[in-house]
Structure formats: C-alpha cells, structure tokens
Image (cartoon, rainbow over all chains, first blue to last red; front, side, top):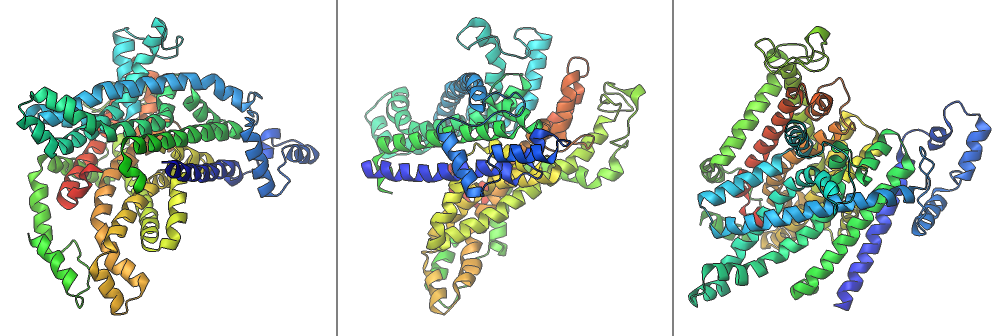
Length: 313
Length: 303
C-alpha cells in the first residue's frame, strides 16, 4: 500500500506541475500585451517598461514561471487588475459559497440518484425501471442554464416560494437554505441522472453474482438480499464517482452561480474573463484544478483501501 | 456465433491479416437488427434527422430574416404571423432558432471531430508505442485535472470568445476521453495473434497500427462520438450563454436563452423555445448514442 500511495503521490505532483504550467501559460498565450492591458493604451513607453520590469515580465520565461510557482506556493496569486485586491483574498471570500453549493448538490444527487438506481435495478425491465431510465435521460439532456431559468420563473416569479437570485446567508440558516434550494437542485439534475445510471448498472452486475444467488437460496427476504448483500458491494464504483462528481461540480457551479447571482468562485471566473482580469482567472482556475486533482487522489487511495485488487494493477 | 467464428478465423490464418472492418454486409444487417429493435434509439435518430433537415433547408424555410429588427413588433407572444413570437428587437424567434440549429449542429459535429481526431491519434500512439505512452497519458492527466467546463472556459480565456474558438475549446475538452478509450482498445487488440502475424510477414509497425489495430477502435469511436455530440452542443451553448461563445446578433440557442433572461417575466417564450430545442436535440443524440452503443459495442455499456 505504501508503494501504491508513493506512486500516486509522484503522479499527482507531476500532474500539478503540468497544471501550473498550463495556468501560467494562460497569460502568455493570450494575444496582446498584458502590460498594455494594465496601464492602458495611452500610457507612455517608460511607464510600460517600468510596469513590465516590476511584474518581472522582462525576464526569461522559465524565470517567470519559477517566480509564479514560488509565489503560488506561498499563497501569493497576484493582484486583481480591477479591484487591486490580492487574488487569494478574493478567492477565499468566495470559496465558502461555492463549497456549500457543491456539497448541497452532491448530497441531493446521492440521496435521489442512489435509491432510484437501486429500485430501477431491483425492478429491472418493469415500467418503473423504464420510467426511471427515461427520467435519467431527461436529466442528462437538460441544459442546466435553461432549467434554472424555467425553475426560477415557476417557483420564484410565479409562485413566490423561493428567492429569485442572490444569497441570503450560509446554508445552515433558514433564509440561506431557501436561497440555495433552486441553485442546488438545478446543479444536481445532471448528476442525479449519472448517479442513478451508475448505481443501476453496478447493482445489476452485483445481482448476477453467485453470492447473491446463495443469499436468495438461503431464503433471505429480497429486501435483505438487496440492501445487505448487493448494495454494499455495488456502491464501490458509486463512491468513487461521487468523489469525481464533487470536483466536476466545482467547475459546473460556474453556470449556476452566474444565473442565480451567487458570488462564488465560478461567477468570479466568468466576470474575470469578461473583464480580462488575468491574475484572477489564473488564480481561480489553478485553485479549482488543484482541488479537483487532490480529490481524485483521495478517491484513488480510498478505492485502493476498499478494493485491494486495485493496488496490484 | 458468427462473430465468434470470424474472430477464430482471423486469429488462425496468418495469411489473411486484413482487418475486420465493421462494414461487411452481415455485420451491417446484425447492427440494423439490434438497432431498429431499440425504439428509443429510433426516436433519437428521427429527432436528429428532423433537426438536420431543418438545418440544411434553413435558408428556404426561415419565414423571416433572423437578423432583421422590427421594434414595433418587439416581445410579441406566439401568433399566426410569428409562430414562436418575437424577441426584444422584434426579430422572429422561429427564424432565429432555425438559423441557430445550423450553428448548434455544426459546433457539435466539428467540436466532436476535433476531439475525436486528436484524441484517437493520441490514444493510438500511446497504446501502440510504449515509449510514448507515459508522456501522452501524463498530458491527458493534466487536461483531466481541470473540471470539464472549466477547461473549455480556460481555453476561451486564452483564445478569446468566438464561434471557432468554442469549437476548439469544446473539442480539446473531449480529447482525454477519446485518448483513454482508444488506448485501452489498442492495448487489448495489439496482443492478438493476427497482429503478430502481420509483423511476421514483414509489415511496418506504422502500417500495422493504422491498418490492423485502428479498425478495431472504429466502433468505440463511433459510439463515443455519438454520445459526445450532444455533450458538445450543451457545452458550447453554456459558453454562449455565459457570453464566451457566439456573439450577438448571430443566433445561437444558448445565447438566445441568455438574451431572453431579462424578459422572463413578461416574455418567457424568448427563453422557452430555444431551450426546448436544445434539450430535444441533445436528447436525440443521447438516445441515438445509447442505441449505437448497444448495437455496435455492448462492452461499453458499463464504462
């Protein structure tokens, strides 16, 4: 197991270095002079040279990258070109909201998707199974931004049950929770479909195993066979998937946050791109990619702990 | 049974090393039998055929010019003149949606094509040449380290918002998926006896890779692509919705939904119809993809 973890850590470090190079290149590959964007098109040449020197942009690219990495490792992601605030502070202020939204969506996806998948597999090829499959298909094909707007129209504008947009505090307060309901559910729709499909196919595979036949032959009640014997084993791939889902929803929150005017990291990225605020884009993309990579790493390790066969691949 | 004997034949007759293409008449028949029994897949195919027909015939069937503004007609609901109503500039929504179908389908197909070509080449090289494997797959790991939509957004941040760049961004996003799947197919194919046989009669490695190993990946690529097109259309529409894709006044469904947001209380039809079209076409591709998978490559079912 130690060898396995060591190999994974090495791979992760390699990936993270690659990620940081790619993020570093965002500003270098962009057409136009980043210094001109900071000082404006009419600034005198001396001012341009001065800022270029201050930012270290007159040094060799490798030097610039190493400096970027060194700063990033100490938590210095530069300053926002618009607000002049340190990027790390802007991210820190907005991450809790994105984290709450993502956690809420993942919880909904699991609480709805897993039971639907189990029922669908247990009642295979019945009308219920087909209904669940079609529902999952609907969920997977739904444009999230469109369903978000339609849900707002119905529940917030017409029925006035929920706030239309904005955030009214953390999720554990009543008003805060209300403002998370619509964004959380719309963000969870696609994942519900994925979790359901995965649980269903994993359950079907496990249900065809011999030990399930043995459990049935012993005369156990079907519910006991399904929950005690099949589900426990079928959940393994689902757990892995939930980890991956978590990371991808951190990215997916971009759309939900924009529609519901939630000041999270996702909305920050979109605003930053529209304003060409490159340090913020770099910082946010780097942070989300690093979190995503760390989650993948933890999932890999957990999987190997739960299923020893993985370690000997 | 026939498939089994076919594989036995090709394994034991080193003289006959031509690859098994998926297009032989019996295979087409088997495919059609399985596919046509799947009602949902047929529904998907019909939906796509309809949208494709609309996209091809667009210039002839659009009732109005999709860009022509007519302020006196703004924000009208559906009527006999404007079947799906008009938007905030009085433009005919049906005409804009018909024009938008071209954009969405084109983005879906071209972006998927970009991902499929680069991803397949990467997967083929990584699976076939051990020396390249770890380099290529580490690059894929790096691409996979970004949540999918964020990768597309990062690419747009570099290239700038435009239709072409959306296709590139959405295409790059699917490269690792193709690379991984094709690589794993290549790894299992290359151990077959007929590959050794081809080598024994003196075939060049690159010829073996392209002519004898690659055809085994074709089914997998077709199935993945049909599932990817819907996804690509969705992602592209998300980018346009966020203002990072197709720019106004050019009609694109995601961008139309975004434009209608401000009028959602009084004119919800501006948002409703383009979103519905998007949903239908993506579902069509997903249904078709599921059907193709069951008919062409049932092993993929659990991946």
